[in-house]
Length: 213
Image (cartoon, rainbow, N blue to C red; front, side, top):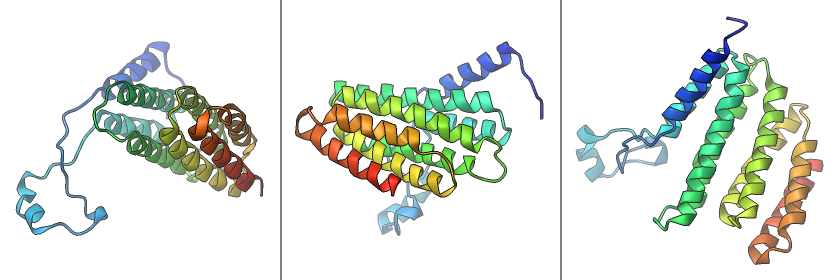
């Protein structure tokens, strides 16, 4: 493994990552056996079956490769770009009514973040503590941004999934103080922002309590 790289190489990698996040053509339906047995109509159409390939999934593969190569700076930039792309996507959903569920979009991105977290806790990855610290900081920024835009459905998904990672991190002996700070900050920020905000404040308090015990 190389121990150094030029500024140009790192900049090129980030630009390539950003380009991979661009929308890619994707079929509207795909038979995933993980979701249950296919119908007879679906079976008859298997010859036309193609997996959905989105820009964020292509970029995610790029990020996993950087993790496998222990390219810490690339991993940091990849996580950052992926979450910024999520924020751009979710803002577009709220600005344009297109029938897309923001909670589903958030679950899709958080699933990728969960995979990054799990990979980061494998024995082959040498930066587990740094990864968790960086993830915690980025997810706090994302959560506060969602709260500022009153995006309660997305925020609920994000903090529940983040708290799940936090409990796993605690069992591994990693610090959860930054996550507790984030949840307390959300609790204080959201309690005066209508019923949706109060629900998030209550959820944040409960999730923080579960981390502490």
